[in-house]
Structures are given as structure tokens and as C-alpha cells.
Length: 202
Image (cartoon, rainbow, N blue to C red; front, side, top):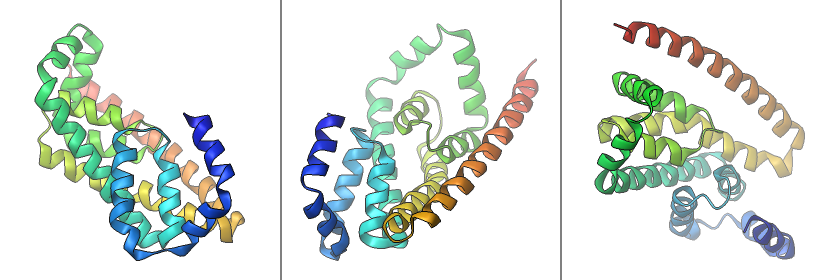
């Protein structure tokens, strides 16, 4: 499927570039549905969709579309899994002692857990959604942490999409800065996780 999509993009590259460059506001509802679909069913990495939103509408509108689409998809997936598969999923997780401990820790600090996971773009969003659905995290708390955590990532995707054609050098600098930010975030997350693990021990 990836090969087919890449082939189609190359074959229709002129039409695609023309469409992206148009920035037609009337396409926004359709683009919101597209972002929800691709966030819910990750056929292609959402960073590609997010970059396309930024290239078409700029960082502000593109970033807002990214946040809205991916957040709505996260809510839909959470509700679907929690309604239909929650009990079976928790029984399955209870078979793995370390996973069950992590679930308890995740539920003990739900906002921080979801927020940190959202800030890491290479952590698959569907995994976060399903895992959160199997835990006891309140929906409103999940959505607040999800939206807040998606803000820097989704605006970054839009910013890269906006600058990749006009200033590749700026895009390269942004990527380097963001990678350094992620390294710092992961380092802080490991320290916090160790502290939470110690505090949860009897």
C-alpha cells in the first residue's frame, strides 16, 4: 500500500503540487475528515499528512487541522476500545506482571503519562489510545492531555510542511532542534519514570 501511494504521488505530482499550493479554504472540512481518517487508520505516517496540511494552509490553520483531526480520532478510538474490548484487554494485560505494574503506574499519574507519550512523535498514537482505553483514565483527562501534548508535535509537522518547499535549510535546522528537544524529553521521562517506580513500591 505504501508503494502504491508513493507511486500515485509521483505520477500525479504536478496535480498534487498545484492542489497543495492552492490553499483553498473551502477544502478545510474535507481535509479535517482526511486527517481524522488517516489518524484513525494509520495507512501513512501522520507526519506526512500533517506536513501536507502545513504546506497547503500554513502553520496556523494547518496546525489546528492536525490537532483537531488527530484528537478526534484519538477520542473515537478510545471510546470504541473502551466500550467493546476493555475487560478482555485488562484480563490479557494482567497475565504480564510488568505490564500490570506499568498500568497501575500509568493510572496513578494519568495526565503526565498521556502528555509525555503524546510529546514523543515516534510513539504510535494508536498504541497510546488503546492502552489508555484499557486503563481507568477519565475521558476528559485523556483528551486534555492529548490536546496539550499534540500542540508542539502537530504545529511542528505543519511548520515543516510550510518551510520544506520555500526554505529547506530552515527545515533542516528545525528538525535538528526538535531532535535535541526529544532527546531532552526522553531523558527527563526516564528520570521521572524511575522516581515514580520507586514511590509506587510498598
